[in-house]
Amino acid sequence: MACKVRGDMGKLIPVISFFLGAALTAAFVIATMDINWRLSALASWNNNDSPPAVTDEMKALSELTEVLRNASMDDRTVIMTSINRAYAAPGSLLDLFLESFRLGEGTEPLLKHVLIVAMDPAALARCRQVHPHCYLLRRPEGAVDYSDEKRFMSKDYLDMMWGRNLFQQTILQLGFNFLFTDIDIMWFRNPLRHIAITSDIAVANDYYNGDPESLRNRPNGGFLYVRAARRTVDFYRRWRDARRRFPPGTNEQHVLERAQAEPQPPRRRPDAVPRHGALGRASASSAATWQGLNVQRQMLHRPRQQGARLGRRPPRLEELHGGTAGGEAPGRLRMDHAGQVHPLTPPAAACY
Figure 1 (tube, rainbow, N blue to C red):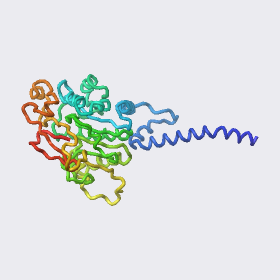
Figure 2: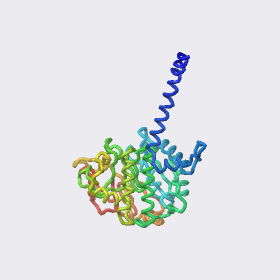
Figure 3: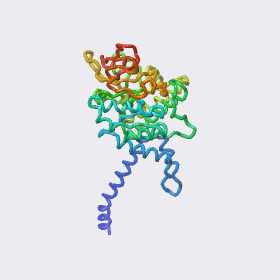
Figure 4: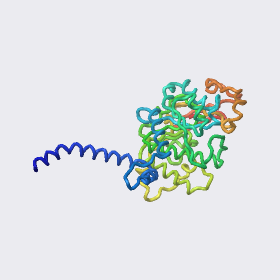
C-alpha cells in the first residue's frame, strides 16, 4: 500500500506544481493592481465562494486593456491623446493631429499605435470615423461634463486635468508604457528616438536649466513619457497625494513642479524616485532635434472661432511648418543644450 501511495504522489507532483505556479502568477498580478480596486473587487465575493458580479468598472478595465493591446507597440508602449466634442469636429485639431503623422518624417507608421481617448460620446463617434483605436472615458455619476470647452485654470478644467492624471496612472497599473501628447502638438518627427531607454519618465519643460536630472526644471504635462513600473505607479500616487498640500485651484503641473522642489522627507528612499529627464537630449550644436508645431493658444480656447480663423478649412500642415496660418507667423523655435528651448520669434507657438 505504501508503494502505491508513493506512486500516486509521483503522478500528482506535476499537477501540484502547475497549480502552485498558477497561484503565484495570480498573486503577482493582483499585487500590481491598485489596492482600492482590489478591495472593492474582493468585497463582492459572498460566503458561498461564488465569483464576483461583473461591474461596470470591471467591464471598462477589460475594454481598456483590449484597446491598449491592439494599439501598443511590441514593448507595450502606446501613444495617447485625448479629445472632447469641441476638438473633434471636422476640420479641427483632431484632423490636423492625424494629418501631421502622415506628412511627418517617418511618423506615419506610428499612427497604428495612437490611442485617442474620447471624453464624451460625440467625440468617440467622430474618432471612430477617422481612426481605429478609440476609447470612451466613462464619467462617474454627477461628474463634470467634459464635452464642451473648459477655460484654462477654471474648476472644470482642473478637474479634467486631474482626471487625466488618474487615467494615466490606470494605464501604468495595467502594465503599459505611454507617451501622452496634447492634441495640439503636431508630429513632424519621431520623439521616441530621443528618449533615453533608461528613463522611467521623460517630460517636456516650460523651463529647462540644462541638467536633465534636476528637480528644478519646470515640467509640462502636455508631452509626457512614462514607463510602467511599480515605482512610477507609486510616483503617480504621491503626485496625487501632494495635491492636498497646495491651495485649491493648483493644477497638476504646478503641484509636480512645487512638490519636487520641496526637501525630501527623511523616510523617502532615493531608489523610489523614478529616473527622469527632458525630452530631446541634444548637444549644443544640434538645432531642433525634432519639431512639433503647437497650434496657436488663442485658437485652443476659442474652438467655435476656429472655422473663421482658418478660413473654414484646416490649414495644410506645409503652411504651418514653413509658412503662415491665419496671417500669423508660426513662431519657429530651435532646441539645444539637452532640450533647452530658445524662442526666435514671439511665443505664438511652441516646438517640442
